Length: 437
Ligand code: LLP
Image 1 (cartoon, rainbow, N blue to C red):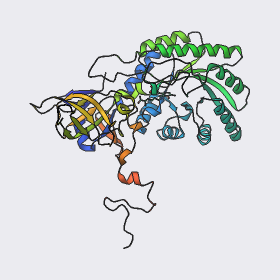
Image 2 (cartoon, helix red, strand yellow; image 1 turned 90 degrees about the vertical axis):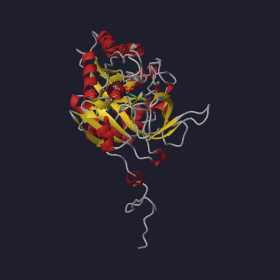
Image 3 (tube, protein in one colour; image 1 turned 30 degrees about the vertical axis):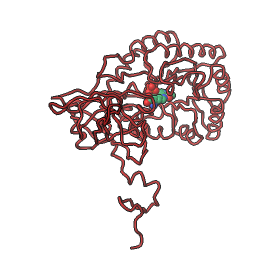
Image 4 (spheres, rainbow, N blue to C red; image 1 turned 90 degrees about the horizontal axis):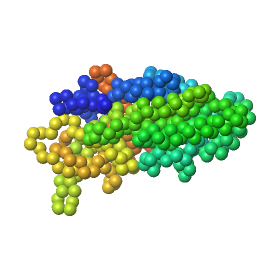
C-alpha cells in the first residue's frame, strides 16, 4: 500500500496536499511519508516474529537525519559504509552500539572512529582489512568486534550493478578465506568474533536466492563450530525488493512473510541472533520526487520524439540513467479538461542525452504542470549530485497532519563555499566580488 492517495483528484500524503508542498517549498523536492516508513518497519518485525531480529537500516538508501531519527525511535540499528554515515547516525540520536560497519574500503581513520564510538561490529570484507582492524584496535587498546562478510556465490537475479554476492564481485570473501580469517581473529586478543554476514544484492524479487545464501552461511557456521569458533549472530544483509510500478500494476512486493518463516525454520535449534540490513524495503515507497514541467517540445517531424523538459534531472534522481530503472510518473493534479494525452520523453535540463526520468510516458501535459515521480525514497536524494552546478533538491517529511522541511534546498552559495576564499562573497553577475572599493 502506497501512502499517496488522491483526494478530489489531487495527490496527497495523508492530509497533506502535494500541490501545497510544491507551492510552499518549490521544486524539485523530495517528500517522505513518516507513517509509511513506520508501517514497513512494523511489517518486517512482524514477519520475523517471534525471532527478535535486529533490523539494521542501510543508511546509504536515505541518510536524511529525519529518516534516521524515525528509524532510531522505532528501535532500528544501522548498517553503515563510511565514517560519514556513522556521524549521521550519531547526529540523529542513533545508538552506535547498534551499528554494523560494511564496505570494502574502510580507512584507518574511519576504523578508529568506529572503535572509539563502540559500534556493534565490523563486517570485514578482506584479509588485509582484518589485519588493519587488528592493528588499529591494538593501537587504541580496544577489542574490535568482527563478522566476516562471506561471498556465497549466489545470483540474486537483479541488475548487474547491484549484484554483489557472485564470485566475480569485489565484495566479501570466499568461504575458504573466511575460515582462515576466523581462525586468525579467534587467536588475536584485539579481535572478537561476533558474527557472520553476507549481502548478495539489491532489488531482489523473491526470497529464494537469499535463502540459498543463508544455507551457505549456516554450513560455514557449522565448520567454524567444529573448529571451536562460535558466532553469536548471522546477518543476511538487505536486498528485499519493492514494486516500482505501484500504480500501473498490482505486482506484489517482496514477500517478507515467506522470507521470515523460511528464516525461522532454517534457524530453528541454532543459537544465532538474526540481523538484517534492509534499505529500499523500508523507504523506497515512502518517497516521491515532485517536479514541474518547464517546457514542452512536441515532435517536430514524423521520426522525432516529443520531449517534456522537467525541472528535475539525473543529478536529482540518477536511477533511470544508471540502471534503466522505472519510476511511475503521475500528474499531481488532474489535467485541464479537454487536454489531450500524448507520448512524452520526460527529460531533465542536464546536458546529456542519458538525462531522463522516464521514456514513452502517456500523459496529458501542459507547461507548469506538477508531476510526482513515485517510489523515490531510496537511492534518490542519496545518489544526487551537483552536476551542471545544480543545487540539490529540498527534502520534506510528512508527519501527522503536517509537513516540515528536513533539508533546505541547496543554494549557489552552498556550492561555491568550498571553493571561494573564506571571506569570498557570492553574487549572481560578476562571480568575484569587486575588492577595489
Ligand atoms: N547492506 C549492504 C552491505 C549493502 O551494500 C546494501 C546496498 C544494503 C545492505 C541495502 O540493500 P537494499 O535493502 O536497499 O537492497 N543504488 C542502487 C542500490 C545499491 C545498493 C547498494 N547496497 C539502486 O538505486 O537501486
